[in-house]
Length: 159
Image (cartoon, rainbow, N blue to C red):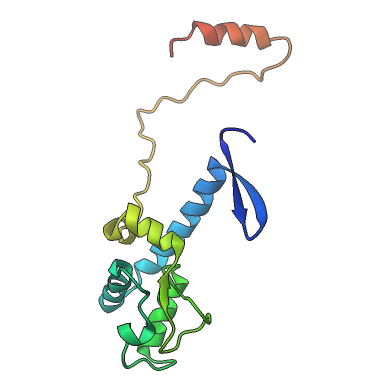
């Protein structure tokens, strides 16, 4: 294993990842979370804040939604939060009154490290290239014949 790789034991399977792999996966999860976050209503964001800021024993559906009914508005809210990778039903995998609501490990990590505002703020697009950006001159392909020449050129260039 290289220093730039990490082995992660997931469900008794060892998965070797590079930093690039982790960045791609975390980036994808965060983009999924943000895509749904921008669609949440104020009341749904308030519910999420209550769940994420709660400490101690997990809240139950009943504690957050005393009037919970399947296919009702509170059920749809929990489904949206689950679709956004924010929460999950801990015991049975389905939402009912006595089901504990657990923040997903990814949501917990993002909430604690990035904060609510950054999760709910769309990612800034990188600045486009300006017209003043100089395009490098085209170079011929490296071949065995010109390899040493290229190495010497590179050594001459300041870093």
